[in-house]
Amino acid sequence: MIKTLQPQYYDAVIVGARCAGAATALLLARQGARVLVVDHDQPGSDTMSTHALMRGAVIQLKKWGVLDTLIRAGTPAIRRTSFLYGDQVFDVDIKPEHGVDALYAPRRSLLDATLAEAAGATGAEFRYGTGCTGLLFDEARRVRGVTLRAPSGATEEVCAGIVIGADGRRSAVARYVGATVSRQATNSIACVYAYMSGLPNHGYRWHFAPGAAGGIIPTNEGLSCVFAAVAPGVLAEARTNGTASHEALIARHLPVLADEIAGAAPVERPVTFPGSYGYFRQSAGPGWALVGDAGYFRDPLTAHGITDALRDAEVLADAVVRGNVGAYPTLRDALSSEFFEITDQIAALDWSMEEIQRHHYRLNKVMKANQDRIAGIGGALPRAA
Image (cartoon, rainbow, N blue to C red; front, side):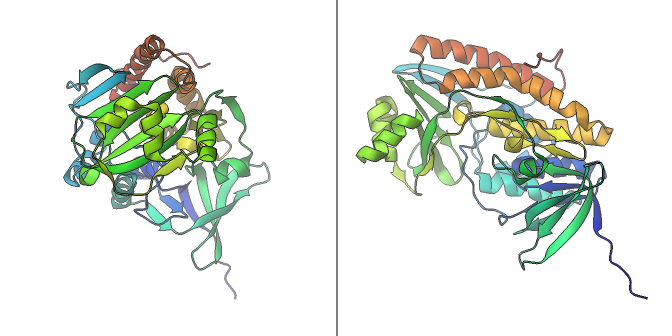
């Protein structure tokens, strides 16, 4: 008798092994779920990101037992964040709160790999160089698994209790399920950043000037991520005029930042983000869910993407374990809505120095509410828009 091989079965298949996907895998595997994570990239690869972590993310990394690994790998402690409105400086020391007395900005090649290693040690299975080429549906159009393509080119069907897309803004999972955009931002910045050596660790340095923003983010190996953000049209015009280089943008639009980095040397080729409008996507349906940028993306200028991704990984994993994935979108939207609105206003880059300070005051209140919720002491949630 010829035996027919049955497809492999997992409680969850996660498409995307970066911070959102790896964190979700870690949390599900710790609850005893059989988890498969696939990613078309190789482990330890870098990705476009300014990678500054806010307190909420540090709280979670510490709670999950991976923060010490990042620190041992040489990630510097950030003990001050400074806001520079033109030449006016406001320094804010990082005070102990929720068991955290410093912030960190690990390179993505380190952060993503550390989370994946922790998930793997807990029992999650990872397959790199593997793409998701489609989804499996039952007669009721419920997702029941994925079709995968291995590095050899061979294809395989894998069944799952839930398929989670953690595969970024161009999410294949979102495309396969037809996830709709429920809300979209009206503003976007364009950004150029480079890693530079020779800068002291004075903490996060956020610079603001008319029509522009920038900053310095200390990271691993004694380097700092230095970025400049302008309107997409301004960057496009600079490209036409041949003045779109990292140094030229900073010199023209952020003279105080230019003075601060004088003498520093770039060690890697600059990275350009041309701009992309933020959005909320439908983030769950029969047999599927989206996490990280796959389901929710807001402009990077407020530097909260990884913090949101880790938060949502925990919200989703908890919903999956409780068998109530339908509750995940409501909670995610409630936690994100006001932050999204303020970020959109900041990304307009049309504020005065007084107005941007007011935006930051509002943003700080929302961040603290999220931190309290992440730390487990939050009260009533904000109302979803």
